[in-house]
Every structure is written in structure tokens, then in C-alpha cells.
Length: 446
Ligand code: PHE
Image 1 (cartoon, rainbow, N blue to C red):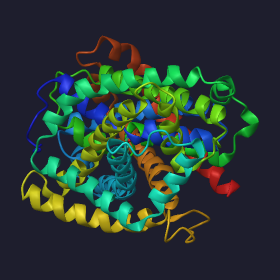
Image 2: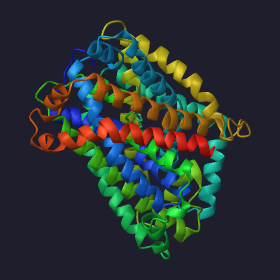
Image 3: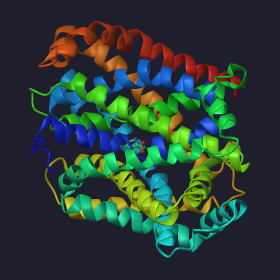
């Protein structure tokens, strides 16, 4: 998409921003974060942050982008008249770069599972074999790097040919299909022997299990899952015309995302307990548990293949948005998109190599007590996204006039009129305060 292009419709915009938001965040990272942070307590705090911090941030980014009609970097400068604010846009682009570098590693795993499920080699194994197999796959440097590169190449090819719009329209069918399959999966998972223990783990908050780090993880997760804090949604909404209803779009994207996260938890945790897996299994959680659940279903092999194809699709639509913000910042609507996309992709790949290898060859390397992969994720989700969000909330509520904000939010939106006063208090006081408190508390607890 070129910078002067506009979305063909409000629906196209919702599809693209929902496509960016819904991906590995809800489907892979959420269950694993909830699993390592005590289940229900994490879910509760995550919901709180999503509604009180993440959602208002999404609206704030939409307001900036639609008002300025410029990309992430130029938006802040053009609104404030002060070139110093550009750094906030650059922070977002840097974060996108880092996120894509480790996102593509997991994208690679999805490709591997999709290919293996095609060959039928993932059906009929014992539950412990699924866990072993996952270890073998992620531990193999050649498989990890090849599939990571393949994932990036697909992303770039699609961004380069500018066919995202086609892909985004396709998500109209793919997303509902993913929903339906998830509901089948939840039903199967809930009917396993011993499932209720998992439901309790996921839905009964035990606040004693919550640590300062868990709270920071929940904040980071609410940003990661909504793609906010890195000005990506600023760039997306800059293609939007003045008549679009921003509040309505926020409500759609947030509710879809929360619902998918909820389904993911309900599909995973009952099975984790029924099969005797560890809820704190980490990054491999869905890759070890889901094949085992599908294995218990009629036509499980076929359903698993379809599921992985849909997951790959959802993952790609998020990756496009990350690539798009990088390319559109570098080219600024001019220049050679194709060349820029391939060069950027090459550097993303290089940066991603240590993350990919950190599940095998480089497993022992630790940065502040984390593997390289975890450190990258931590840096992006728990540092750059909250810091970016903090400054975006300050920018919006202190550098933009209240009547400009109110006209952006209320424009062609009935619900916007109701939401605006609440949103204004959230974005001006609650969002920055919450971020500062969480960051400082976890720094002190460190
Ligand atoms: N929200 C995406 C997901 O949940 C990840 C993402 C983060 C995409 C930040 C773009 C920007 O998979």
C-alpha cells in the first residue's frame, strides 16, 4: 500500500488492523504467558490492562494517524510542529524490527508443523512424543533457520506485490473459519477426563500467584496482542478517511482479540491438565498440546492441518503489518518498495538468527537470566512497547488539543460520544500512571 492510498472501506481498515492484532499474540503467546504466570490471575490482570490501557492506546494511535494522515515518524512532528518528537516514531520502527525478528522464528515453527501435518507424521503419536518432537524441531538449527527465512520471504513477497488488500479480504473467510475450528477444539478439550482442573486454573484467579514480573508480562501482553505502543496503528490509520468511525473499530478489534485469547486458553488448559503436561511449558505450549488434542478427534489429522494453515495465515497478516511499517517509514511513499522490503527482510533475518538458535545451539547463552529469544521478546513487549505507549499517551493528551481529540473520536460515531470523556481520563491520567507504576515496581522487584 502506498502512503497516498486510502482504505477502500472502513471494513477494509478493520480487517487490516484486526489482521495485525490477531496472530501469535493471542494464539501462542497468551496461553504460554498465562501458563507461566499462574493462569487465572494473569488472565484477570491482562483483561484489566487490555480494557483500561491497551484499548485506549489503540484509539489514541488511531487518532494520531487519522489526524495527521502521515506515517509513524512524520505524524508526531507534523502535529506538534517539533521535529524532536520524531524519535517516538523511530522507537516504533525499531521495535517492529525486533518483533519481526523473533516473530518470524515462531512463524517458522508454524510452517514446520503445517508441512509435517501434511505428511501425516503428526497423527497417532503418544502425548510425550509430541513434547519430544517439539524439542527436536526447535533444536535443529537448519530447520529453524530455513523455515524462519521462508516465513520472511513469504511476508516480503506479499508486501512487495502490494497484494495485502487481497489477503486482508481473504481474512474475512479465514478468521471465521479459525473461530469455528477453535470452538470445536474447545469442545473437545473440555470433554477430556480431568478437564475441569484446567478450567479452574485458567478462570479462577489466585492472586497469590501473581508476581511483579507477571504484572509486567500482562501489561506487555495487552500491548503485544493489540499491536500498540509502537505507532504501527498510527501508520495504518493514516490511510483512513475522515468519515471513519475510530471508536467502533477499536471496539471490534479489542473484542475479537480478547475473545480469541479466551478461546485459546479454553482450548489449551483443560488439555494440559488432562494429559499431564506442565502449564508453565513455555514457548512450546501450543505446539505440544494442540497436536495431542487433535489426536483425540475424529479426522484429527485433517483438522490439525487446516488449523495450522489458518494459524499461519493469522501470523502472516500480523507480520505484514510489521513489514509495512518498516517499508513505509524507509520509503515514505517514494522509493523502491521492493528493494527496501528485501533489504529490510535480510536484516530482520540476521537479527533473528540468535533468537532462532536460542532453542538449540545457543540455549545456554543468557541475557539477564533469559534466553536470547526471551530477552528479545522482553525488550520489545515489556520495555519498548510500554515506553512507547507512555509517550504516545503523553503526546496525545498533552500536545493535542482536547477539541481536536473530541472531534476525531466523535466523528461519525454515536458510541464515540459516550466513550470520549471516559477515554480522555484514561489516556491522560490512568494509562501513563499505570505504565509508570508497573515499570517502576518491576524494576524495584528485579
Ligand atoms: N499483535 C500481533 C499478534 O498478536 C503481534 C504484533 C505486535 C504485530 C506488534 C504488530 C505489532 O500476533
